[in-house]
Image (cartoon, rainbow, N blue to C red; front, side, top):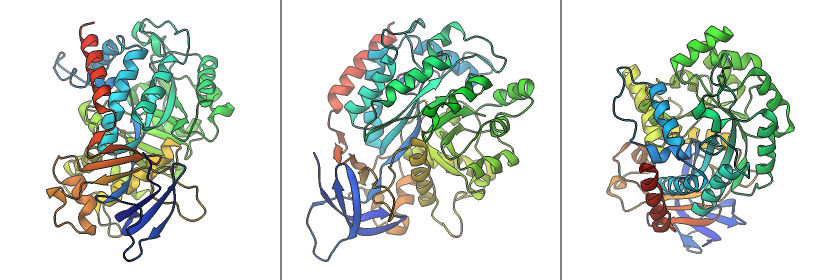
Length: 460
């Protein structure tokens, strides 16, 4: 259902609240106009209106294993022991399963306020590692799931070639992730032909340990890498940093900056363990730091150097990664809370010029997430001379007790830092309402299929 004209009495436009009329045409926002006195034309939104939030890092299949890795089974549990649980679960998921899991996840994302997701996709082949008859089958399952749920998708087919910095072959459980460069670029080319207003195709290098230098250079030299999002996991764990130093005599971020043309196309996911010099150098490139605080906390990865990053002018966005939480509120909340615990200070992200912690974090996540997704999202209207943004927005519940008595200066801070009730009442993507009154338009059917799929996988 489309609404060509929206009256938002409280619209967050260009970092401030205003009473505005938003025009929607062909799934995009036109110029926003101040609401005239007595103007009630068009649909009146039922609460504060905000841009939809981009989710810049997702491994969709992992949503179905959330909660299965929380029992201690080694004296020193870590990311590496969690990875063994993940590999075992991934080994049971095929294309139909992936579509069912991803559709349910994307419904949950929409209900939480995410309207664009960057899918870092490396589950390419059959569980035994043999290719599908259609090499794009697993990728197409994600495309179909996103279309079914109604979320914008940046699909990032991922190159994964080796099992470590030393170039060891992929293990038996990693075989389904693997491509050579030629096959990988064919896959990207195939998927690129499917692009639409709600589907963007980028590229991903799984990590420096999984992509040899020569392969990285070949991908970057291809025409497919031009003007497209380019994502990579990097410096997530101390063990990765130590292995990089041992084999390449450089830290991961340091090595990448010295050997690749890192610029605003890039999204470095996690980048948790950086020196002050790496932080300054990376921020200067315009690359986006892809932060996933709930997953990074769940895995015991460490804390990103947020204050130094912001001081250096660095761009950032947030993602739900392993989906132990599916909420931009929780990602932004814990991005700030982690810094408070580490520094023993409050409102770490705020400054004298930007005193609202919530507004500064949300504005950063919208801008950085839009850049990392390669999509015109994250705004309710475009500044003069810029492309019209896709008509994505979310409407907060004006009737919630949490927002009672909150003026404009405290509205976003309250949404992000007060209580755990979901305040996202309505969600629009590309001009279509996909969530109304807290319910997704196809929620029951998608959830029923998901429950059947996960029950079967649990018994496999």
